[in-house]
Length: 316
Image (cartoon, rainbow, N blue to C red; front, side):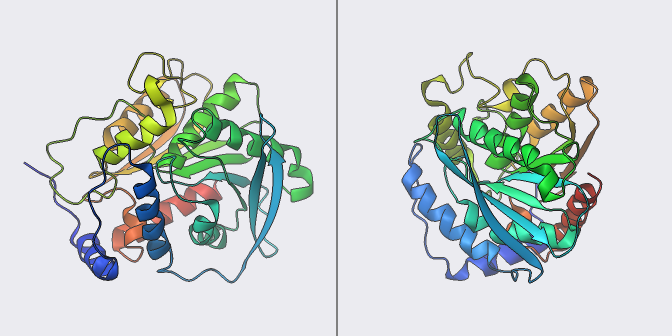
């Protein structure tokens, strides 16, 4: 028996893509074509909702471990000062997208919750393989913790968050910070996270539309991990699911769709966190694929997912 797609999501996706144009099949390993397609897709998706008028954006910068300049974007809402903050890693398989493409989604989180966000313009694979995306974000986390007093942030109330590839980076960042006696992380918020490079076998139940498929997944992981992909020597700083010791990790919120190829690895990761004593809230949402709420933000299930994320953000 195969899964079915939520009819509201199906209708919204069909309407959204009417003017997108044909997408030629992309070979495994073709990063350039995926960057062009996914960046165009995100511009279309994220432009469906207006940019909040009550959010201010300011850029800072910090230095990566290799001396590179990393841009950090700080989003705040008016006079709101909850004391908490979120470091955000954007999605797109660790190979595509840009910090500025996520201005809308990040600003909407800030507008809805009052919680300030720091988005990191981390460097992407294959030009910058693992662990560089994670260590770039770690530099951002160190900057946020060091500047917490002047930003009005309690350094014990900083969360890490990301979607898709950024969700995988956020998970690995929590591990990296633990292992390097880094800043305290209050919670890891993982939205349909990309966690396991060994996820290459198609699910026979997935006969409906999947925006990030197995060829895309193999391309992303191959770019990030190179010749080590799928082998025994992959570090959890590259693929978080390779972690052996889950002790001492922060509480988690994990959300994934039933039709997302990351479903099983998200569930398995939550189970590992549970077993290690990390309080974890897991949502497996029925009949929706990867990035469902970005494609159809007004669908009932998208609004429901947004309310859950806002609740968690406000609780940090």
